Length: 590
Image 1 (spheres, rainbow, N blue to C red):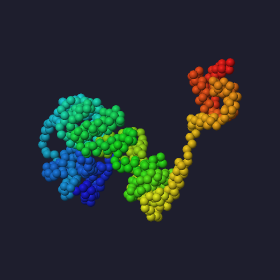
Image 2: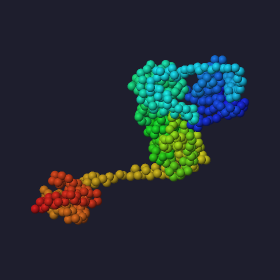
Image 3: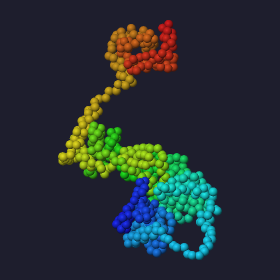
Image 4: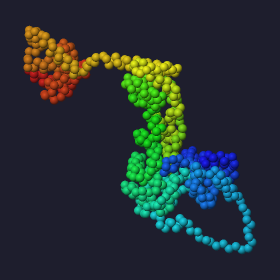
């Protein structure tokens, strides 16, 4: 039997409809008697922490005597509700339809009887009433309750909010009050409770839990019932006992490594932790690589397949890998995808398409969808509705908190135009097989024209690239220009006759020891006069940058710094050294 069978029966027989009272917790709903207005059942669709699987259950308001009277394996104490009027029911393959429907009928009947007014005539005669002291269980316990725990218990507040929201709020308030508390009592015994909080524990269990937590914080990892371990995780994701979100992340990672990996936890607990850590990263605005570390396969798909197809900056390999995620399988074995040229041209054609035609993206991906997002859905987590709005971008997915509630905006693969994808890929595959002479030719399809112009443009660009690469490369760097000039002078000197060499050298350099400095001295004099040495350098075929290097090297020992500078076209004297240069040149002239 399933919950759907129960809700169908109740609606037909009593005209009672399932009500989802809490938008933040869609897995919880109630059945209320239309006559009394009171709850009859609390329906839950939850995760089993130990197995990591989803299951259905409910709390039904009929006497707990049904547990002993029927003794059915799917009947147990209530999951969430308190008091002897409530029992819990597991819905699985063993749950009997007739038994559950009968119990619901009993619950309706009892609820309506309790809601009636019964008038009993008082007996005649004198009646003497005596006070009988009632000693509560809590009163007997308080004698041994540490003051901090007693104060924590007093913090518990009942409110008009939903049961689960109230539970989370109280857990957070009590937890913050006890985040630095330590104890050294006896460790607690076996304990199993769904969504455990401090309020679910008696004093001995509380002291035992805090004693265990004290050891865990001191790196002493010892086994304990899973429910206590979950409570410790709840504390961290709520920021209890950690100074920052980063510290909380590290604490949970350490707990997973030293507690679960040592066999004290199980796979279900590990799966839950990873799911919560993804939510934790988004809620606390942690780096995207942290969120992706714990992301579900669906989220990885958004990052690795959709995002690269939306950006022209994506590499060729990223685009091809993303396209292969959505195209027909045979494309993966195409000879085009095994060719560097083919990969480059396809990627470039895709870039042309998304940049040249904005509607191309909409036709391919449709518009992104926005829908509510419920982080920490299966954990005890207090949502502070007063926090400011925030946005968290995770590749192409955008998470947004607005007025304390979350939504996500993302492209949905289920809405993609797969036919358009296939047409684009088929046309690229067909054209490039022919262009690159790879494999056997493919037949034309009616939709191929959708991508034809982009593929042809990419091929034309590729051919231009090849032509540019084929041109001889000339390096016009200053160092190479100086080397070319020196080599040309050597060649020129080797071609001159002895008389031509003498005629060429005589007027220019009367002093052979200082011939290089004399010519550079003339340039410095021109610069000191505030004139341009451009005509002088052109006369002797000198490059400004080469002259600057030569002058700076020649005078470095005397001045210790560069005295001229060049931008490759002109030559300029450094003003700070003008007087020094004038003094040196004057000494040489004398």
